[in-house]
Length: 196
Image (cartoon, rainbow, N blue to C red):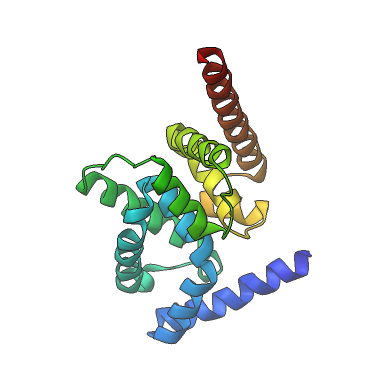
């Protein structure tokens, strides 16, 4: 397994070198390979699915402009994460946060888009809404790791690299994020039962 990670980093370093020299196809390939976690990271910062694509476009432009500043070719992923996080924070500041619609139709649409047939009844829609609400309420460092873990195929080591923290720190943050979400969701469920 270690060999595969090392091989992938070397391959990314070769692509990064070509991209830095002006090879647009190499840069496109690097972005495609990292798109899943990049999208999750941006979502965790901007907080609304409707803004993610606009922000990702800004990030692509920024990467295109700044690729020649990449010094450590084997660290393309953390370099990209720093640019993405900064651009997403800038995007969030520039746009007034629109309240995220959490009505049943929006939740149903979001879930259908992510996993066909996910919502089969109102209870599932309510649970999905609660999880989205709890995720949005997480402090950013916990929201980032939670969204990365559940929206991409990155290993723990790769997520730690993206977040620029040790693996143990990333694991602790993920465990805490999951616990905070679980506590919020179960607390909301108990409150609803008590209200009936």
